[in-house]
Amino acid sequence: MLGAYALASKDTQHTCLLIDGTLGLDSGSLASALSLEEQLRIEAVLLTHRHFDHIQGIPTLGVATLDQHWPIDVYSLQGTLDAVHEHLLNGDVYPDMTQPLNSGPAKFRFNPVEALVPLRVLGYQVKPIPVPHAVPTVGFIVKSDSGSCIGYTGDAGGELLPFFQDSLGVQVLFVDVTFPNRSEELAKLTGHLTPWLLRAQLQMVLRANLPMPRIVAVHISPGHRDQVAAELSDLAAELGVDLTQAHDGMTVLV
Ligand SMILES: [Zn+2]
Ligand SMILES: [Zn+2]
Image (tube, rainbow, N blue to C red; front, side, top):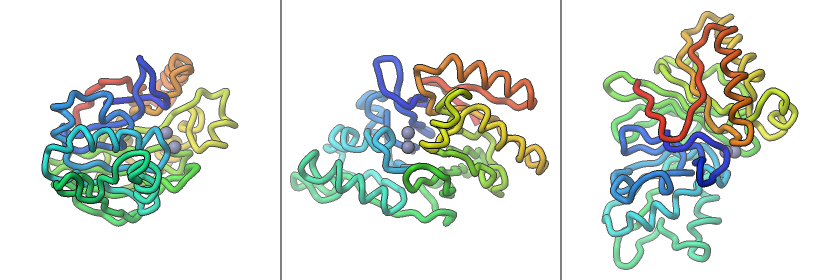
């Protein structure tokens, strides 16, 4: 868990996960939370959507690893890839690293994905799961050949059931819980969850008798961290669910 927050500051990193040191889930802190040596190990990145806090690390990661003459594969919805190309890697704001540069090969290889169409990335099984948010967004289920399986909702205002129903068998689910309960209107408006809104999702899972993975709340609004943590802890006790709030630098073993 490179970052667990919705905002970047000296004390908080943008929500971003790194699997086995090589596969990034979103890019908001791929550069800022890793040493240059660690950045050189990244081989692929899955982007959930085009919002800046999720795509921010791409240009910096590209330049940091430019001397390494093999590409980093970036996977996302076509619209997200287009937005990164058009607004960040456009040859104006930053170099277009999807094209050969300085007589070297292109740094980034963009790979469009489609919702619910499984693919293989670095030997992992990956399935993009569409979720409701302010812009087109997919969360991801990622399963290793050894059988470990995580889900990551990205920014999501609900409709989480597919993560629990999927035959890949999610063991740990990283869920957007940006706001505290009192900000429910704002959460609904912006396509995020509160602990109370998450409660409705988890109740559906329990009612359907689906297996309940460990839940880790991410994308926390830093100003509301303690309030959200308290509300999550009440929810965990009420539903009897393994539910914790993430923090930067947290290692989750699956
Ligand atoms: Zn977003
Ligand atoms: Zn976000």
